[in-house]
Length: 231
Image (cartoon, rainbow, N blue to C red):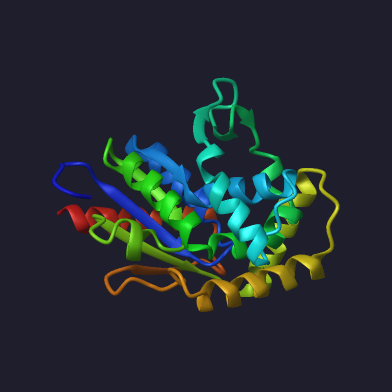
């Protein structure tokens, strides 16, 4: 936030903590715009998978860097479901970006400096236009260090794996719980140790461990904190 009266609520934390669900509910309650920063990185990952780009090697990174200008990401409201969906170059990719294939490579892609710079620039541009709730890994530390409210979400890795497993199974996606658990632990390690914008809790962030909390309980927690902040 730079020189405007808009409010940003920044929600950071580990993968599969329910950040997106939490952020959507907060945005709906306050009448804010919800921005899923993770969906932006997932869209870049999907672009790589669909175009045969392998950014684990120098050639792949170089090609991705040269094609970043071809990647356009937008969020559009589905009038029927009332949910915001992710579009990549005029294609609705909301379902595709949630698959295990994208999950397996998104952390590697998000560590590429040029990718992060482009995504952060897009996120700040959105934030400058109005009141937003944005979730990700570095929203409160890098993208919006002056956010009005910062929340850092965490939960037990096994709890997160089970939640993610149930979510994918409900969507009809066949996965193994062990595969999900291994992926989450790998993501945690990569997110914490990456050279560019590693996952960190902002010094002034409120910690929410939702290992044993329902979604309504999390919203009650938010309302108390929000009320206190605005008193």
